[in-house]
Image 1 (tube, rainbow, N blue to C red):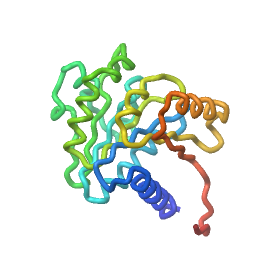
Image 2: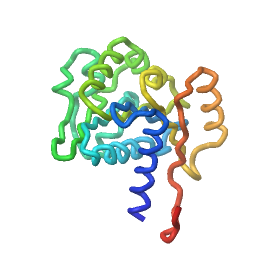
Image 3: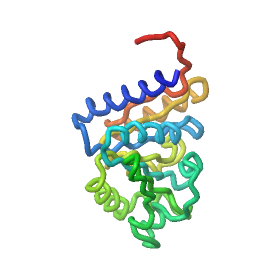
Image 4: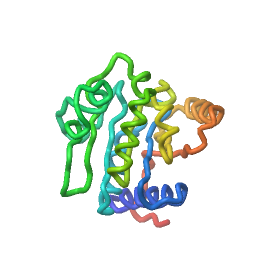
Length: 205
């Protein structure tokens, strides 16, 4: 089952390269219709697959309302994205480096009173432009786009947006409404991922 799990992420990585027509310098924005769809867990594992390629990979927590990547990674660090944007620290001070695995991590930082405005600011664009020059792969975990609009600015400056839904959990109407709204807003670089499917051990293909 572990092989099937890992292979699934390798297939997704290959599909991303096919869709973006790029082998490196790819920025992936990951969101979901609702909370609890598994987007943060998905983000961590996709970043891990990219880091195995030996390329410089950065995992960024831009869910400034309810960040969870630090807990998943078992890290306790207070500085992050929001601190950089309000000029409370530098990028170098906020990034947690892992030279052995080629996977660095940029936490969300303090929870700001205005996360939507902060992410829509020119400073966010400048931050990502800087990071894109330093890393070959950037994986961004964002707020559920079906609930809040924080992720919208990030979808337009990412190469591809993955909308994560969870089998047996995500409300179908919520998924449909979110998808319809995104297409109406002319966000065309978005693709759906169905998470949490149970696989048979002997299944092939």
